[in-house]
Amino acid sequence: MLSHEANSLKVIFIPFIATSHIIPMVDMARLFAIHGGVDITIITTAGNIGIFQNSINRDFSNHGRSIKTHILEFPAEKVGLPVGIETFNADIPPYMASKVLEGFEMLQPQIENYLFGETLEVDCIVSDSFYPWTVEVASKLGIPRIVFCPTSIFSRCVELSFEQDQTHTKVDSDYDKFTIFGLPHKLEITRLQLPDWIKETNRFGERMKVINDTTSRSYGAVFNSFYDLEGAYEEHYKNVFGTKCWSLGPVSLWANQDVSYKAERGHKKVVQEDGLFKWLNSKKENSVIYVSFGSMNKFPLPQLIEIAHALEASSHDFIWVVRTKNTNDKELEQGFMEEFEKRVKESNKGYLIWGWAPQLLILENKAIGAIVTHLGWNTTIESINVGLPMVTWPLFSEQFFHEKLVVDVLRIGVSVGVREWRNWNQFTSEDLVKREDIGKAIGLVMENGKEAEEMRLRAKGLSDDAKKAILVGGSSYANLRQLIEEVRALKLQRLNGN
Ligand code: UDP
Image (tube, rainbow, N blue to C red; front, side):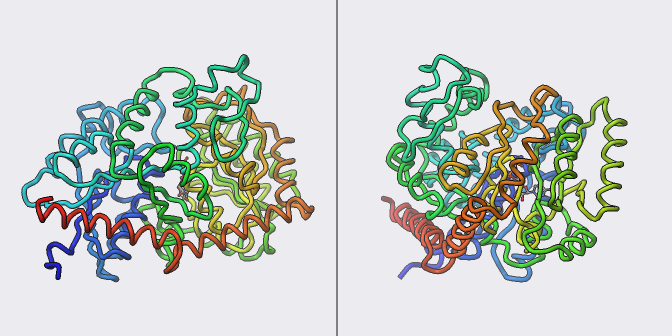
């Protein structure tokens, strides 16, 4: 018989300070508490806790889960930032981003002090891949470090392919398509669509090398995914990387089953959008397109104009989550967008959201027929959960890889035709996606043709698979239980001095 102490588990989750890393990792931490009876502490900074505080308060007080936070002090003053600027999202002006990164790197001693604290007795660290040094901390503590990869298993496989084969260096032109080496599917890409850190040696590339090295030295990796979605790549990852990996998703679907959790996810309080749901509920099934580019992106005015015209000319209604840039164009922008909003309100054709959208509630509404998305992994999997086909508009990060997954492997999306990868928030007026191309792609996913119908059926099939994965006996459910039991067994070995 195990003693109570040997049987109980204390796991520390350490999310990176970006909204879209915190959201899924907190969902995952909550799942450890809900399904494994694990004692969870989430480490974050004071300015980031609002993103998820309410959900864990409710887990604790309404459901008796053992889940709490440990708060770090972000060194805003030391790096010359105004107090409260400590998150990577669309609200930080680009010139402040390097300071936020500087402040983030200064958090290491605070986290180490906490983890090495005499009374903590931690059994496992689940760390965002952006804290590579936690691999050494875990090793000193004699406990497993599990790395949280905030992306798809597919994109990690693609990155590993480029690291190993350097295929991009063997092609003559930036524009020629070539096959990505060694993947389960034959997929083509151009050099123009690759992230800069793959093409050149830059600081982020150096960071990625360290991340890859420490990921392979970790006990294993966890992903917000499920086997029926990425099984071929889960197997490929295990074989090529040679480390353990568990798909434990879709975490948003699994951890947020009540309306209140969905309404507040990623935000300090329930997003008050009564008008929005009244409007949405008045619309026919599958008649509205949802347009959102995540938590990080802001487009310049000329691109907003192209989107606005495409939406207005489309025969479908729309919701658009608008984030505008604080540029010299401000007045022009306000003028144009205000006029546009007024017109689409009057015609009852569109609804603009200027702040944080309650995305999970919008996506699951019957009126939504498709999404225009930048293919951030969270939004991609949230759309799959509810069976929505996608218009794919990749921007930065690994989003062009997700376009390959969605359009070519899963065949549930239509590309808007972006040709070139850009760094975060470095779009210029020369990179515009034209209104005709936006309109054409929306038409292809929303209209009733045979191809759109088949795409919709495939998307619905994946949604059914997602729902099964998180039920007792489903792949993610089994993975979560297995992982927790493995960590428990490791603890026992440690206590027995092995
Ligand atoms: N999100 C939201 N409301 C918004 C914008 C984003 O709820 O107005 C959520 C969305 O549901 C997803 C996350 O924020 O969970 C965005 O992550 P994703 O990986 O899609 O994109 P990123 O923000 O990293 O570009």
